[in-house]
Image 1 (cartoon, rainbow, N blue to C red):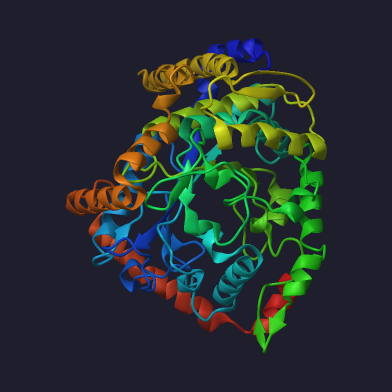
Image 2 (cartoon, rainbow, N blue to C red):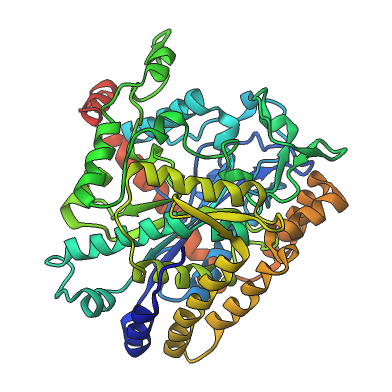
Length: 520
């Protein structure tokens, strides 16, 4: 199941400078909660700036769901320090509220208490809120307030020049896109290692099921927390933030960029009987952007996406056709509850090594059926990854192999990638991470999900969540800023409101005409 990458790894070791200049960035989501652990009912704090236009601090689905975004960075430690600065600033500007430290939400008495994110009166802002209303009507608000981490990653031009023989990004956009699509296919085939090592949602509040039926053999704690003994990331399960049935049947593949974009565009034009039953309007109010399978491209809930920075009013798919794939976005990451900022150096180093390996390993074309088949391995790890003797399928056709042996083989390759990265940096940071992680295959109690479940059993989910939230609030509030200054944050707060007002005053179309232009 693990492909032979020895030749490619030898090439990499002989060309270490090809990895100089990796770019990365993090997006971290977190719910604002009250001092008693309930969901905050306050609007997004004005003191943080305009969520529509702020560079670093915005909201995701709900007013209470914060999202922090780091700029593109070539250095992991600098990136994480900047992310910590954002947390420090926010901790000081959310009054008596806290940031919930888990991916799965705190106890929410009613989905009606979840207010959709508000972005002002501009057409763009109203469309963003309406999109979220559509998500609520399609999938439920409870599912939409699950928090996660996204990791944006790109290889330097020097890598593609040396590895693919291109001259520049413009003339070589097809080769670069093909390389990133190869990375994505390997991610689908082997990305199950991520929930195994870093999954941190082995259970949920029973109330989160919200009447949904499940035949999963949950065990229950007195607090109302239900869990699977060997689960790693229920956030990625069918109970969490994942594709529904209509999306899984789209047949969108990652073999060719034109084919991928064509599938994406088709999904945005294909009517859905389920969403037509919801309707477009009720009593004069919009219920969703449209009644198609996807309202917009972002609704495709993939564990990894090809991305490109868009220009002006173009769509992501048009941007990809124009310039090719610029970077990839990893989306299958749980919040690390043992980090005040939800992510740490270990995860970033692992992802760098793993994504480089995915770019190097051969990746045969995948049919839509095989793409669905890879989901089986992910589900086995998501629901029972720490189960002794767990077997994973090989190429969706031949006999199963033990997860433990597959994981060790993969980490052996990753350590060679790590050695090359360390040779550029003059340290052993990446190799240390590989050495620490490989032990988890023989000792699954060392995984993040196992450690978290142990703490939940000891303290209860609400008590543990509040212990961590209170600790992080105290620590972050007291720490000095290191990369961004208080004045820089204050300037961005002011500028973000100016940018939002400029958008609102520049509108020349009615909202209906604006929506019609987006649905053309």
